[in-house]
Image (tube, rainbow, N blue to C red):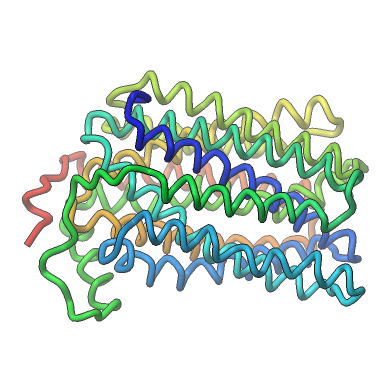
Length: 407
């Protein structure tokens, strides 16, 4: 697996990209609070980020299937340079306002949503379905190395360099990531969809929904992947305020806690490498969501740094493991001509759920403490685990035939 030069370069690019993302998340979230923001501002930021991800995911699927997946991924990396670069510039001019951070975060989030689908669509080009779970495990483990290093680096860089200067480190990383992707040997194993739809993106996505509706378990996996995915994407809507306001800690401690999340996710990725067929077993899908919800509920009990680090790592591991299981099943079972669009549908649902979660968090923070909001979030994830268990029992566990999904 690691003997494939294209996969090694792709892993390196992904690790660096997620390092930059981890750094950006910590810096932008803390910057909102540094500019006088409240937990409600963080919820608004999360809502804007999620809202930006919806059109990116919707239009991104046909783009991924129509053009070079590598080129689309490079475009998502370089596209984040301008909005993030504007933040230190505005700060240097003394003109930075909270809404600038919110807008930049939304633009970056939209591109991140598209890149999540485009990066994922590259893996089926390199591996057959039997190797996808192991490849996803390695992929997510390496990705989380970047996340927790980036988060720790961001937390340490804020007191050392200031509130906005650390973003410049991420910009340099984006340029280097793009260079690594461009250097990756092309090894396309699937062809673009031969039956095009005259560029009508709505019809392209409708085709993907048609395939999903014909294969209910694939549909359920694509939809319910949004639950752990939205937690991973949206945790920083509550974590900074939980660390700062509820527990009285600073930026460095926030970086450590966010990094612990990444360490837990990294370990979960390593565990998934050892599992060859777990993504085919619906019990793992159900159990992973139940475990994630319980872990999230326990996180609310943390009141000091050591306990916060341990529980954040537990939540990160459970959420990442759940996402790997769902994503690996979707990648393995999606008809090759529809892979990009089906992954984009999954990302679209994730963004829509993230938007709903962000709006719900914003409402709850008006009447509840952040600690209680975390409890409610964990309980909702547990309900999701129960729901998919009941739906899988109702619709059965029939595997998808690729031949059935193609025209």
